[in-house]
Image (tube, rainbow, N blue to C red; front, top):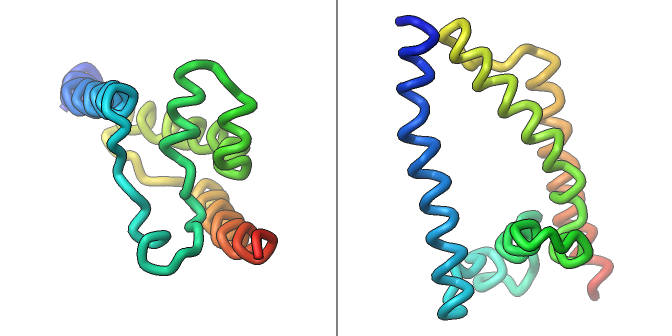
Length: 127
């Protein structure tokens, strides 16, 4: 498969993902209905991703203060996540494989550890 064929293969999925996100944002803004955090509903504790909807809506408005208030750790990790995702996409288009390099996997696992620690600390500090 050629690079252009791989790119054409990615575009519909990317368009659907973008459209679904924008539709969710529009529904949320119009109705106030959102997908609740099941972890929070079950335990009363915030998960590491709690606030991601508020963060995304704030970023759509370029309101960085509100995004920071929603989930500061995830906001700090977003550029790194975007960088790794972009590298994987480019690698897939060029080479046909999106497999992460060992150093990229190390970064992913470090981010997972940071998010788990954040999930613990945000609940301890809130008590």
